[in-house]
Length: 236
Image (cartoon, rainbow, N blue to C red; front, side, top):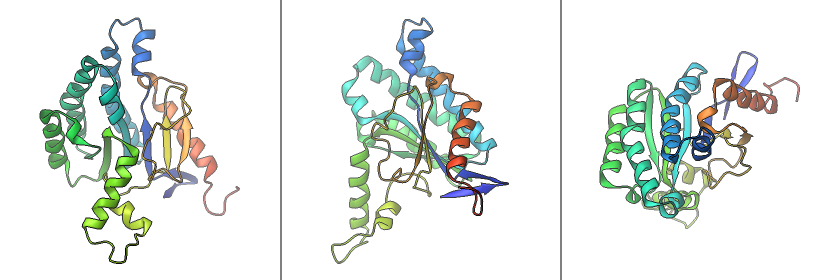
């Protein structure tokens, strides 16, 4: 889904794979990768502000995959859990603009972390804009959960499911399909980021590590999207 702002086509829903926190910490000469993760988490507040200023009201951010929870060291994952509990819900709540949604297997999270996210979802419900945080996320699991939810809701009586019905039953904000995916740190892969919702998305790879990504970098990604989607009647 796209929209036109003046003579420029803008994405309705932007996804961000924020990568490079550990490398940023190493390059900064910091002894602990956790310092990079904290900077990366704090930087989400900047992203929300940039998107609000540009009229982007649907955003999905890849915070923590299920694989990372299972494979990274207990110390690192424990620190990430604390950031998710202490930093991210508060960032969304104090914007007074964004409603929080969570997509992922929250059973992988400590109870205190899952509870903090649920409280923030409740306290921000009804706001104009929507941000989905992918936490404990697995792309294939997301699709399976959407199909299961559609079936349990009685969406099929013939054994057939319409793709739009599955889309409607996926977790996240009200607009599911993602128009533009931004991946930082130069990596040329999506790492399982919302495979169903990004089926038709443009992909922009930024060489910047996530903590160094700035508003000008976001504008570069939006310009790439606009060039690929000229307004109706414009040049192809």
